[in-house]
Amino acid sequence: MTALTRLSLTDFRNYASLALPLDGRHVCLFGANGAGKTNLLEAVSQLGPGRGLRSATLPEMMRKDAPGGWTVAATLDNDQKIGVALETGSGAKRNVRIDGASATASDLADLIRIVWLTPSMDGVFRGGASDRRRFLDRQVMAHVPSHGRAASRYEQAMRERNALLERGHVDPAWADAIEARMAEAGAEMAINRAHVLEALQVAIELRPDGHFPKADLALEGEAEQAALQGDDFKSIFETLAETFRTTRRRDIAAGRTIDGPHRSDLVVIHRPTGAPARDASTGQQKALLIGLILASAGALRADGDGPAPLLLLDEAAAHLDPDRRAALYEELGALGGQAWLTGTERFLFEAFGDRAQRVRVDDGAARVED
Image (cartoon, rainbow, N blue to C red; front, top):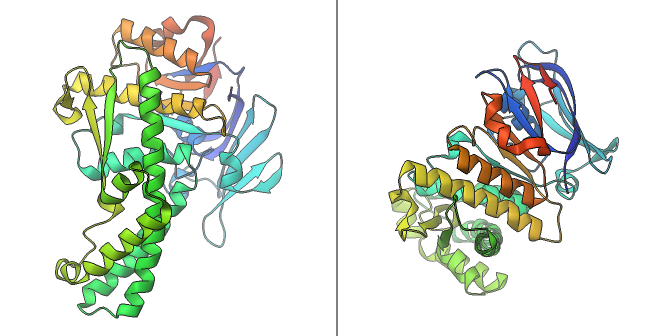
């Protein structure tokens, strides 16, 4: 199991200082809107790879009027102490420490994996391909922390290629070098996405039937399709490089790179009806999304190479009827990791019984009530 037994904040969002003692059970945060419940989830999300559940910049998370910087520190159930801090001075810098020693985000990912669901994700199925791609890549990063670095390399190389395209004339040697970097990072991204999609589908099949419907998943994208069919890195790399080379003239006319992993899409089918998720009702989409997050956590648990996940569920229980809330808590209990949930009222978490701690949040303060 992976769980936090203490969370400490300094100058993070609306928290000047907080030391929250925990006992390893699930954590239910309740309080008025704007009290700082989501800020606590965001703080926990900083302990994993990436920019956290709001995708905020480091300075954006600093408390207003704070003298400089912020810290998020936690103790794990194995007594290891981990922390992340914003260091100000010569530019904003993220500092990671494990048991008091300097560490990297990769070191942190070996200790803790985090999956989350926020209200902003509710429209993922009705949104564009970029919304679904962002959702998938978030799950991929939880499984393969290096995926974020591959995506950053791809985006940087693509910006350089687009700058060449906008000039209207491309030096072939220069373009070859940039496109090779794009193809290398893109092949890595495609393989990661395909691997995690397959793991998600397996985890979906293992989940119980019931309140959170199962989904059938697919990927649209030439590189991802090749990865799903078993093509190796070299083959996918060569295919992408050839695609970039042969589409230069068309892309010059468009002024941008049209094809590549940055255009891939996640296809989700609502299995009970056989319809695309975008055509499901709002309630069906919410239940389907929760099911996907539970499957992602289940796939992480089944992966023997990493720790059991932490789940951060912001306002997930508020829109569920009592039976669905109880079903959600049963699944969370079976996953083996620690879940953090938010809601405006304490009664929303009654079905958890003694499996969870309740924490009252009130304008930058939080206290355990049981």
